[in-house]
Image (cartoon, rainbow, N blue to C red; front, top):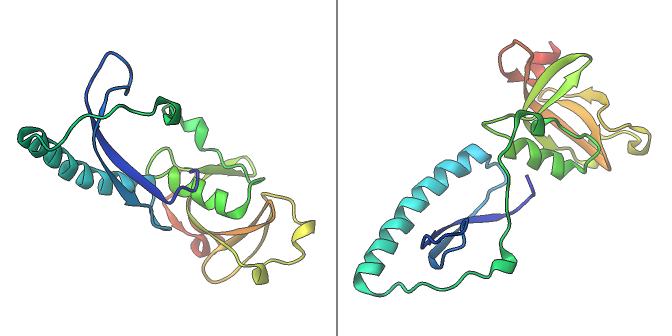
Length: 179
């Protein structure tokens, strides 16, 4: 959601606080431009298993030593709720695309088409050649399409909706929705 390009796994010792114990091992994982929260979950689960085994082996061999956390660098992230997934079209294009990726597989980004809820599963940043006079476009306005997607204005540009799901409907391509 925040446009980060790297994430990771940490094994740590338990103490009385919330995630405040000493760090044992850490491993980073790059976030690709097509990753979603769901694909990262699976990649992190695999990496986490490896880091856990390495931690246990290192503790047994005496090569892993706890080190204190830098609590000033710690952040807290609250649990997502369904209402957190409503799209704000008044954001830059990359921010909208990252938000959609971060809301998958749950709760799934959504918007309204008239009074009907529409889930947005996949979108991309449009290049400036696909956007008419962008200064006259109001964020959230559908202004065109091509053979792949529906064009929607956002702050400072536009995105193309590649996959969506109408209320009480099936997941489909932007093109199928237009047809």
